[in-house]
Amino acid sequence: MSFSALGLSDAIVRAVTEHGYTVPTPIQTQAIPAVMNGGDLLAGAQTGTGKTAGFTLPILNRLSTDAVGAAQANKSSPRAVRCLILTPTRELAAQVEESVRVYGKYTNLNSAVIFGGVGINPQIKQLKHGVDILVATPGRLLDHMGQRTVDLSKVEILILDEADRMLDMGFIHDIKKVLAVLPKKRQNLLFSATFSEEIKALADGLLNKPAMIEVARRNSTVEVIAQKIHPVDRDKKHPMLSYLIKSNNWTQVLVFTRTKHGANKLVEQLGADGIGALAIHGNKSQTARTRALSEFKDGTLQVLVATDIAARGIDIDQLPHVVNYDLPNIPEDYVHRIGRTGRAGATGEAVSLVCVDEHEMLKDIEKLIKQTLPRQVVPGFEPDPTARAQPVQLRSGAPGHGGRRSGGGGGQVVKVGAGGNSNRSAGKPRGASGNGGGGNRTSASPLHRSGGRGR
Image 1 (tube, rainbow, N blue to C red):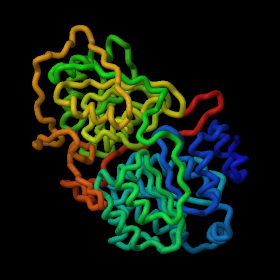
Image 2 (spheres, helix red, strand yellow):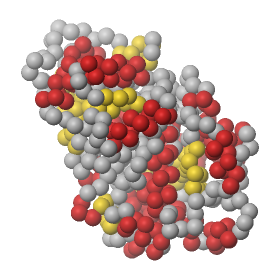
Image 3 (cartoon, rainbow, N blue to C red):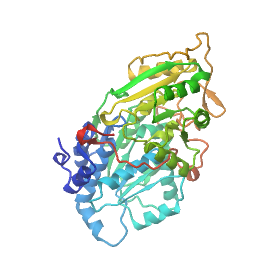
Image 4 (tube, rainbow, N blue to C red):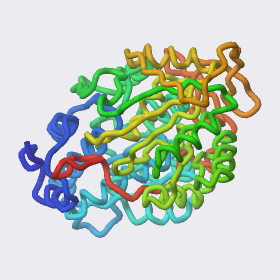
């Protein structure tokens, strides 16, 4: 199967080919024809499977080849937003918009990305000039709606990317506010790595007789990722991580912590051990996030320490190692975390450092992924068999326990009920801080490269 065989225009196939991709991934093979048919779509795909191109390619094809697209390209008045893509985090928004630009370079379409944490005035100026495809985080989009600097009355296609994370972060009310101003007649696409009951409820209310695609078993983990558990006492996690990095000569390691404070502390500890590390989380400035992500991607930074929210959208070629310094208290986040490695067929290793406090979390993860992860005790770091569990800190000053639903960044805890009601991320003024995450990415969405190399 080739991209041209899927019905994509010569202009789009040319851009894809120039980027080194020749063979569509399974999600692309199924999603591209479904989207181009014009109907609604509910798609489940793990991270690293190429889902971003699975929707960017067909929407570019639809919008660039129809009569409206031709007329809009030829008129002098500002373009209207025809496609709206909502993502949960800044770096994912930047990733998706870059894919639109890369694959749409030979079309007559233009695009823009808007998110918080940066000045709003340049975004207002860009929107005023007219945009065909708008990628946005919910909070900043509502800011523009409130200031009447964006017109969504002509939207033909709505895409919710990583909808599960948007619900976990408490964006359901923001999404409903956006839906209220969109045209009733439109195409809706919902992409999610996991299918929770909340996602099913959202899909039922949003989608009209959707096609359904699921390219991997629900909540499964990528088979090419080697997963292991290192039991360790809580106060020995940092020495063990330094030992693993040095003894195994790891040169590029993505490390997950549960809280922002924990990320900052670990960076200092690793630095004292002579290991270069930077943190990426919601309290970091946009400049700091961009710098950390850029240095990690080009290999000059050995260790990137991240919270769950900040890591959404990180897409790095051949990332070999992911370490769960702290287990996530939401089991689904384990799937998202380890999906940063083993992308598009590449191999990868996911290591979790688990202390007695996290045994219940580990049980929940293994129940979700339907497998028992192998345990390996590292000599010199044998855990104390008499150690007793202590409450796990989910956010600054707030002890909690496994199973509590959190925003994932260490700065807020969000509960989502079965009916879809949720609390917005606490403690962050929407216009000031944006929607978590950060850092612009520099590579396009996952596809299969010729020669088997991919993301």
